[in-house]
Amino acid sequence: MSLGLFLGIIAIAGVCEFVDSSIGMGYSTLLAPILLGIGFDPLFFIPAVLLSQAVGGFAASLFHQRNRNVSFSTRSKDSRILLAIIIPGVIAIVFAAILALSLPKLILATCIGVLVIGLGIIIIVHFRFKFSYKGMVGVGLLSAFVEGFAGCGFGPIVTSGQIISGHHPKRAVGVTTLAEVPICIVGFITYIVAKLIRFEETPLFSRSFDDIVRTIFSNSIMRWDLLGALLIGVVLIAPLGPLLTKKIGKKKWHYVLGPLIILLGAWVLVRTFLL
Image (cartoon, rainbow, N blue to C red):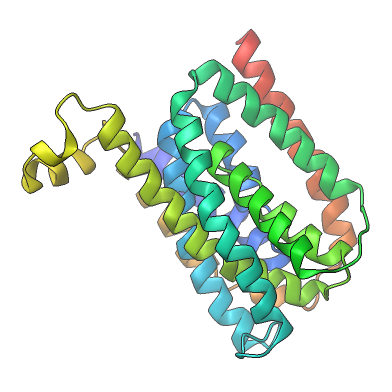
């Protein structure tokens, strides 16, 4: 990776993280189609996006709590919603990652493009349903599966799902930001382990520990330069988003993000089939 591209990805990750930590959506949904459009292989950028999203989400959630945008006390509604999303989410993302690794790259890229367009439409159109914890479980399952499969979509589904069911927007953003941490970490680990098992000829348990470590940190498993750029971008910017959560007009952001995400999804499809 050239220095110019490395610095550019830091800037892109920073912008995406600022949007995500401010309104609870946008990091991976914006970033995944951009990376795919640049030319990165989905099986390499998805785990990098997942881990960087977890780091950014953890940092931002601390500041959401500090700024009282959300409350994670033991008996709070926010905490109960958080558990209802995380528990099914960690299961769903494992199956999604395994499925993504079994599909041809053309099909995976096409699915990412279609899903991104669908997410853009979801952001623009405000559906409504009555709040229930069973509904939040469904939101957790769907969002985590889409995130693990395409490397994007968790924020729009979880944040919008809470808001349209009546949960306060500021609290919905804080819950989403923390919920993505364990789910994305599990997704990242699943990708790494599954690639070690699937793409290496020698059985995993027959290899030495040193060999496994060297393989993990090789370019055959991960683009660590890409991960490094993403981590720098999110760590630098994550504390800033929660400061603006109380001031941002959510509807205005929805109308900006929705069309932009649809355009990015369309660009993925164009690049996949025509370029």
